[in-house]
Image (cartoon, rainbow, N blue to C red):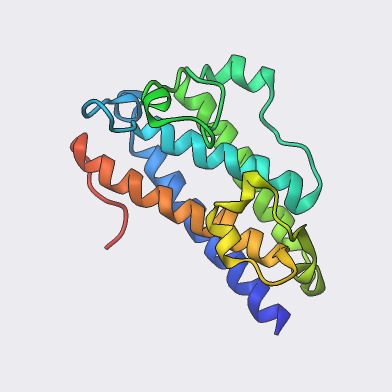
Length: 188
């Protein structure tokens, strides 16, 4: 059963990442930094938030530090050097990408690392509890807390919630926002 689950995870993550790659390849920095109106987050927020959260989740999922560091910030030039998980919409409406091609390089590095790691994962590792109950406050009100089993959040839960489902949620935002800047959606 593990091989079926792992095969599905690997294919779904590659498919989702391909949507992000297609989206970024068909947008410009003007598209991603566009502000539709007050209170509406720019595409730049969704792109950086998800990519940076996938990068950060790798620490818990695989035990490796994030790729993002001061050197990447210097290259990419995010207006707000923060994924924004614990910030307000009022703060994050100011998120902008500086160097769009450098951002795309960062995104590819994060996605490639995740896909390579998933290729090495073995079935029993999916069962490991990564965040035991009681869940810490930073996790207690998240979607993954709702998914967690009696023992806590397992590696499979983390991959599904923090990577796959979270990524699809933000891809949906990006697809909608592409319409605001005159571009089409990514899928039907």
